[in-house]
Image 1: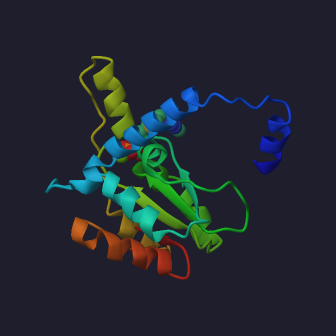
Image 2 (image 1 turned 45 degrees about the horizontal axis):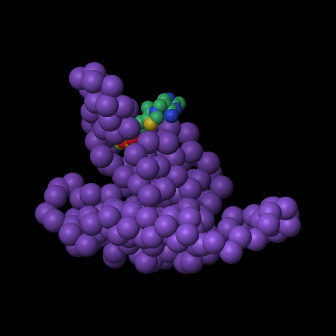
Length: 188
Ligand SMILES: Cc1ncc(C[n+]2csc(CCOP(=O)(O)OP(=O)(O)O)c2C)c(N)n1
Ligand SMILES: [Mg+2]
């Protein structure tokens, strides 16, 4: 990323007028503030909303941690809410944020097989969330999108991945910390 930026910078002329940049930066600040509403006002919603999960991870994860996100609503939440300050690199702590169906399929086997010290956060919304939303947006009554998910923490434990089930907001920080501190693959 550094190399690309410096190569591109050599090709552009510096501009004095900051109007466009400052307008965009202020729009971005406002958008970030708006996205934080459900972090500041968590309410009593059960199951919990995904925003506090992202906020907790922003606090707890090391600044050089690498986040990955799968397809689905978890991707939307990650994209919108994770604070990403640094560029990509190998040899660093990896935190994978998966949607339920991804963990239900192949990847968990690789993590367990090679004892990769990856931390997995599964957001269980009991649905094919993005598909459900796509149907609603298209004006189609959603169909076959609700899921009876297994207890993913127990699925993890069954294949030697540390599993920590977090059901309440009160347990969010401690549960995620436990997963991140665990010296091996862990799922929250
Ligand atoms: C192999 C495959 N099939 C279908 C899709 C289409 N798809 C995109 S998001 C999604 C829903 C995933 O549901 P879930 O894993 O619960 O994630 P959520 O959207 O609820 O976060 C599906 C089926 C896909 N991306 N890949
Ligand atoms: Mg889901």
